[in-house]
Length: 105
Length: 253
Image (cartoon, rainbow over all chains, first blue to last red; front, side):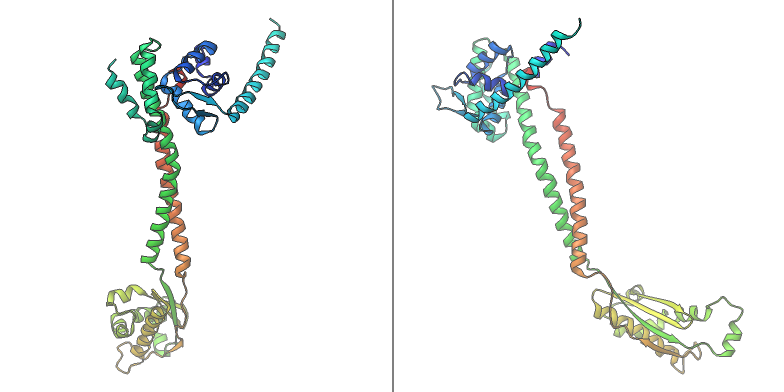
């Protein structure tokens, strides 16, 4: 397994929610932001497929369109969801990093 | 990149998805290509791949419907089949046959055991006996149909059972009694070619046994639903395999 495939298997919903946690964004801004903080380049179809599922789940909501772009915002439920998931990931990361540091080289 | 082609790509998506997100998706794709963020070919591959994924989700949802619909169709087919082919009821008349005269016993003593009663079974099922019973058999039927509907057996050394089947108890009873009466009349006739056979009705056919129609509807309908579920699951499995075959990792886009 390569670093690229590990990165590719990241949960794109978490990436989108993490990006929206910083404020509402339209599709283009989401792709640029996610590429910036995670190094993952989402394709346009991939992004909207994930947004559709998040919107159906009530984790994001569409805001009124600005020009021909429509921004999306995280909902309170989405904020709670991503907070739980990131906390869990952080706990696992902490355990993993500690064990790596403690393991005999 | 041909803008017309780019705008046509969202048409690959399921209608509800396309109506809601199609315009935004086309706009974003144009922006990304214009800014050099994505190559046109990569955009086409991504949009087409995700469209296949969305169709896969639609089909995944419909697979459950497929199983349910085919199961219901099987249930209905089973009930219709049971209603069109109602279960047959069986009624039995018993005839007591007196032991043969000494002279006949002596003449048949070298034959197989039970040979006398076996002969009576053949006589009871013969054409002359059945022809005489035919006017009283219910419903009206041909000689061959009557022969197929009637079963004659020797239950003991001196008892003949005449069983008949019918779609209802009255038909089965009437037909069994008709054949039993005809046999008694035939062998008791002074002109009978089978000699002096003493036979009396021991028990008229007065009831019928068999599975009642509601139970038959339930059982055959249940089997129809079961087979329908299996058929539906098979179709769903085939759809699922086709769906899995078209999936890819969307994060690679």
